[in-house]
Image 1: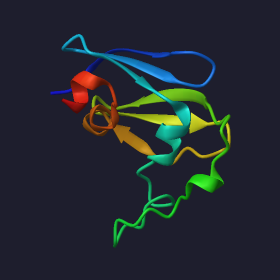
Image 2 (image 1 turned 120 degrees about the vertical axis):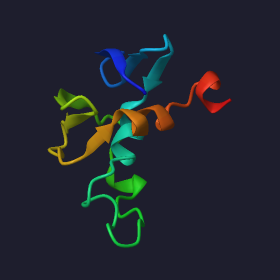
Image 3 (image 1 turned 120 degrees about the horizontal axis):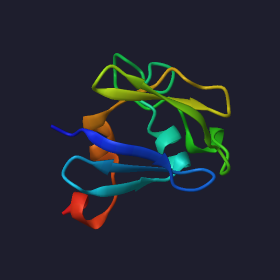
Amino acid sequence: MNIPRRITRANQHDIAITWNDGRECLYPARDLRLACPCASCVDEMTGFRILQPGQIGEGVAPASLELVGRYAIRIWWQDGHSSGIYTFDYLRELCSCRECRG
């Protein structure tokens, strides 16, 4: 099971997660915002992504993070968006490091 040992800011915008297997993943803030899985960003019936890259500025950043139970985080974005719940498994899938991508 994918469980974070530590979730921190990597810099002014990005998020770093150290996982229980020791893997460290860096998540660029804009990539995370564009990957938001909420119903405002992804059509629930079709799975089609409603949120388009042009709608999100390059400087988007998380304002705060909140744990959701023992399975996810909610990111409160500086652009006012906060309805996405990023499960730990989903975050691990989003990691673009060489080890996670195989």
